[in-house]
Image (tube, rainbow, N blue to C red):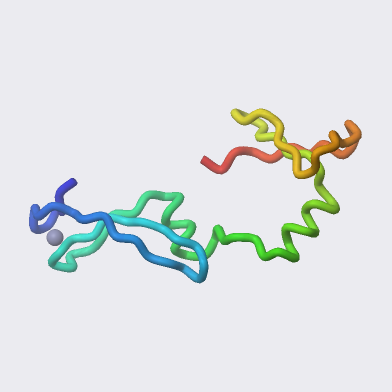
Length: 93
Ligand SMILES: [Zn+2]
């Protein structure tokens, strides 16, 4: 991938927002950078890792997660939940 301003090759860069790693492509002459939408969301802290307390809260309140468009169901716990405990979330990609 080339920089649209100086035509040099963009290099993959790795960075952190808090404890969330994200990647982007940057120009060696600092003309700017290219970042994919999901990585942008990580960079701006719209997506972040859950804390252990948040994970525990999810385990207590949500036992079963379905992607409404592409993923098979995932369980938080080894025992399957009652059908009324099933919730669906759309895939973020
Ligand atoms: Zn450039």
